[in-house]
Image 1 (cartoon, helix red, strand yellow):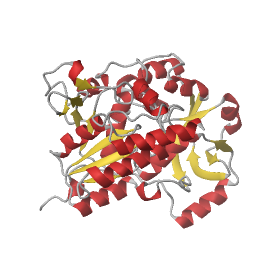
Image 2 (cartoon, helix red, strand yellow; image 1 turned 30 degrees about the vertical axis):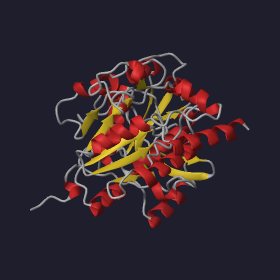
Image 3 (tube, helix red, strand yellow; image 1 turned 180 degrees about the horizontal axis):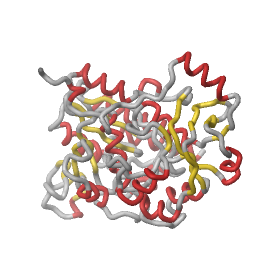
Image 4 (cartoon, one colour; image 1 turned 30 degrees about the horizontal axis):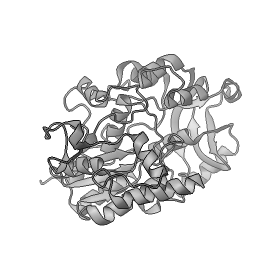
Amino acid sequence: MTATPTETIAPHGGELVDLLLPATEADRAREEAGHLPKVAIGNRELSDLEMMAVGALSPLTGFMGEKDYWSVIDEMHLSNGLPWTIPVTLSLSEEEAKRIGGATSVALTHGDHVMAILDVQEVYRRDREREALSVFRTTETEHPGVRALHAAGDFVAAGPVRVLRLPDHHTFQEYRLTPAETRASFVERGWKTVVGFQTRNPVHRAHEYLQKCAMEIVDGLLLHPLVGETKEDDVPADVRMRCYEILFASYYPKDRAMMSVFPAAMRYAGPKEAIWHAIARKNYGCTHFIVGRDHAGVGSYYGTYDAQKIFEEFDAGELGITPLFFEHSFFCRRCDAMASPKTCPHGDDDRVILSGTKVREMLRAGKKPPKEFSRPEVAQILIDAMADRTR
């Protein structure tokens, strides 16, 4: 029997999780929630809840218990042996932990809405220092991930969740595809091999070059920008999406590239997040995943290619998705082409390489970076957005 495209890669753990209750069950659960203790969740945990609900974090069916928590921190695997690198937890303050008491279930709320019911299996105390060192390789609170960890509660509630509703999203509606929907789209397009590209930044010529190199060896590209919570100084998601749309309209073959948004919140966990991102893209149906320079990095907390080296710490085939490693790319004036250190023999003087700081300075001044660095249309969107922000 010939394999269909969906059979080319299984979800992590073998089954795509779906935690969203059917309408009748959701109504009964809503009634039940009215009699339960309530725990308000923040934007980060809301993103995690949405990702669990739609299967992006398969095989997770709820917030992690203590056994999995320590296994992930110490071994980079769940307690059942599956690779996993970042704890997915529901934080509680000491007051909330006491208020829950011996409750077997609690209602998880966000704003005025009951989002889910957590069937409480355990409440335990987290170890912030060990968690920070394991996930972020630092305990410095200047690191945004460590800072978020310190803002979270000392205790963690664990157990399976029953999701009543997904968050209300008023942006990027046509791009909010679940893993089941991206997989169906790949089948419809006849793609058996798909490369995923994670980004929280505008796509410049260097990123475009990496994507198109990868497209030479697979059937299709899934551009999968992260639209959950990011640092304040990151380019806002709506601005980035306009950049992606204009690129897709003019520079990508429509039958070989598609875009969907990734609802995760950024952790800035570098190497550990590269693995986590790869596993999530496997759940979305990608067979390959691009890992470039300083993936999910921030500041100088990680080595330039640490996010690639960490893949060596897993057995061959254990992750179930093929990473594609790229060095930093650039336009070489002497080659008169996009290139990388692997293909270009020339020195830095011939290479168009701009730092993020330099690019921001140019955009603030209303100057477009060289066309070899950024498509002029993308630069114009960023200049206009920068001007609007300044006003």
